[in-house]
Image 1: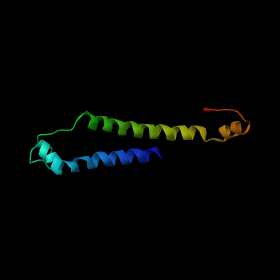
Image 2 (image 1 turned 120 degrees about the vertical axis):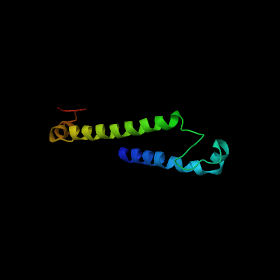
Image 3 (image 1 turned 180 degrees about the horizontal axis):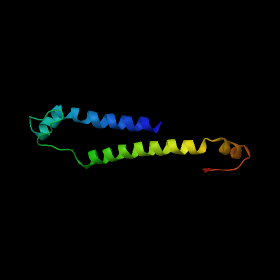
Length: 90
C-alpha cells in the first residue's frame, strides 16, 4: 500500500513543471517561462526534499515487504496462536 503513496508523490513531482506555463508564474518569472523551462525562476529546496521523501517512501516499502516475509511463517503463526507476543522470529 505504501508504494502507491510513493507513486502518487512521484506523479506530483513529474507534473509539477507543467504549472510553469501558468499566467501567475509568467508574471513572476518573466514572460518566456514554459513548462520544464523555468528561465528566471528555479525550483526551491522543497522540490529536492520531496524527491528525498519519495526515495524514503520506496525504501520503507521494501523494508515493509521484508518484515512481512519475516513474520508470515508457520512458526510465527504457532506462537501467535499460543498467545505469545512476537515481533520477529529468525
